[in-house]
Length: 361
Image: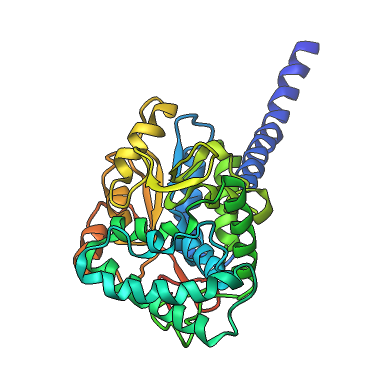
């Protein structure tokens, strides 16, 4: 009789025990899911499915670009703007900063910028933005940079503008980045200054991207940032102060050689992240941490990220922000087996919108 009672009791309890198991599973699923935010609904749905599918897999990892992907805006430009506002450069050799090593056709224009900078150097460290000389200097600086960029490409123009930081120590650059980020976030979105209309100012760190980073990490999926911005500025931006709280060992950016005193030289280290070469960097520096596996998720915003979004055979999703991509590239992305998801933003307000469209200033 006692045995019969136990059999009946076990059968009676089976249903509620199963229900409790299902409830616990649902609670665990909800705990790692993305908050609704302003995600485009289908994008959030597919990201949640990816997170659940890869939960607890030690070889699952995601790789994000930073500028105009993790952030709305460009971190390097935010730091450059801050440095230009005070012209707090660490070298007196302005010719080496602006002119040295340029092709002959650029020397005259660069010398004019150098002469304007020489007038500002005695005032370095102050807010120079109210001075007509400063506005003329900045207008000419950005105009030259845009022309040089179009002529010689991203890498050489990047090295030229990075000369501004020659002589900085890593700690000084981190301090500059912190102020630049705080100042840029306070602008509430991107805008174009009237005296430099080719350029955008401002930064935004959308809450949805922070939520995505944290949801991935809660599920045991490693999160990496691979960017062309300066390594020290990235470490500042992705740390706990601004809500991303990434492990520094998971942040990879451009880095420069240092002199004997530990101050930056205008020469990039070998093996740094370069635009268009991110897949090779990921395979060399990140995949070995995960037994050679491909990332399950990558995210980018520009043609420089195209290979990172397409080159991995086992990639499950590619999250992109459509910012005037060439039509052929968009066609190729759309044809890549349904892996591409497109999230919209309003960059003028510095926020996500529940759409596939990006509104740019």
